[in-house]
Length: 174
Image (tube, rainbow, N blue to C red):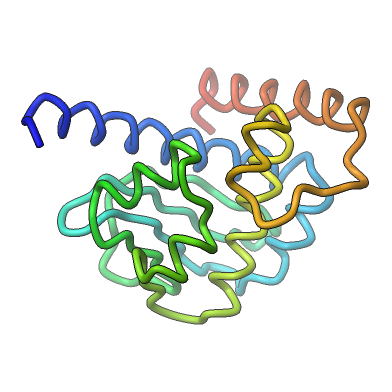
């Protein structure tokens, strides 16, 4: 693979991980489904998703208030859960919606270090993120099952709240 293509893929995966981190942070504040899922993580749990051998990645922390806090892309020494893509190309396939997360996992393109049930919980949060923020025809390629009960009105209403929260977080850096 050319160096230029590799850099583009790396940039794309880094951007998508950042968007997912920001999105999950916002959704843990405004979406009741993700808020309920996040409540299942132990307080203070640090969750990372990264690409081997040297990133890019994203790190989240479950706060005592029941929210997810986006910590950026640097991996701390202590992790409660780490989902690691074995290669940049594998992460690209998932974040470009070429391959779904369950398919990537079944093909051994990623490993989970830590509590597997927490990993499944994180994937459910990411499914919700994809279903809400992406058009259905794209999200359906990335999720195991698109939520049948997700109506257009609910989706648009939550989109406004989520994107508004992301914008507010970016401005205030809180």
